[in-house]
Image 1: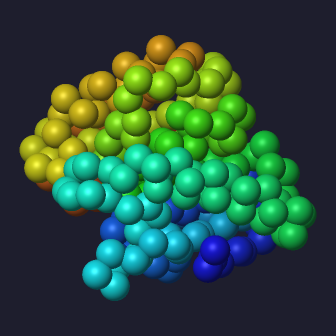
Image 2: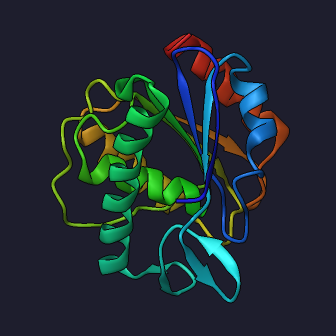
Image 3: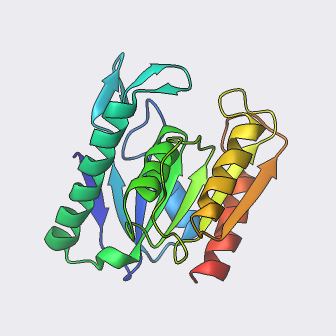
Length: 199
């Protein structure tokens, strides 16, 4: 997978962009959250009308479930390979994803045990329904959400939060009175959570 790796501290921020983004997009975010961390920023392997994504969708808000499962496994295997190649602790990876990137990060949590140390998900949706989640008791999650988000309605956020909590995760949801855009105050809230939870 096309990516950028920057060596820093033992903590690794896995950056996952939104639809149409690239591996450059979330680099400023990483600076705001943990400027000392190592960075592994990945570009999605799927193209939708020339826009990079992490998995296919059938329409707005409707995921291609088969492709989602395949791409999630692909990303999980890439993380294993990258840990070996760049010599970082595989158990120290914190995902930071926005929109489509948050969805693939959520899917990692839904499908693979101990795949992430923690996750910061901005405007995620429920990746799959009707599946049994692995043990997430050691995987805290921050969710940033917009009360007026047309792509990811509030009920979607609430459902995802409940599912992750049922899997044992300690979940914090931060609400903004905004739409789908990522706000500065949302990032600041995730930074405070990150410092408290992971520090």
